[in-house]
Image (cartoon, rainbow, N blue to C red):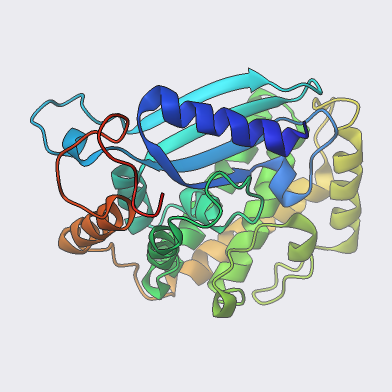
Length: 288
């Protein structure tokens, strides 16, 4: 089986083991953004919905916010999987969490339920891409970039540089609202190189240095020294983009009652009923 088929089968087993249904799955990380090598793991993220009965209880532990697993595939690569309960995902998206927004925008999927749950998926995407979240998304990108550079001081790694550069360029695009007409979050690194706007256009020598790092990943993820041209780009870009992002309209967190209404609608999309019954024993999701 191909890696994609193995990942799909493993996610279906995860459904059966945990008594939930996966309404969305996507790959993030290096395999999505174009910086992977043959040995790179598949960073899989998914959103799941539990039986309604598990939400209608006073037991605090009835609904786990996240589920995770790691597994080695037949070709020696691995799956690093993290799942989010839909109620938790709604909460994160409502606050403008850029990493969760990337999950919902991922084009690299595995066909767990390719036709079912389209309405539920779209409702989450609409929440993630509300115009009122531009500032939060941009600020979160810059926070991630700053954190990656801070990690460079502790452990010089190629991934830290690539992480910082990509999120800086993504923040540039978000600040200038270039990708949002098609509701596509800027993620693919080589499509971000040509970013323009606030003077953060990546110099050719910096782009060349980044490309060399991507090639070097096939041999090692470690660095023996800092890359001055990338350091200079990062040091110049982050303050400019922070200033630009601060001029955007202040982000408005989605009100709680709207999040609750969205949660209820998605439960209806999936189960087609409000009866507190178990998926595994009593009923299949709507559309099965």
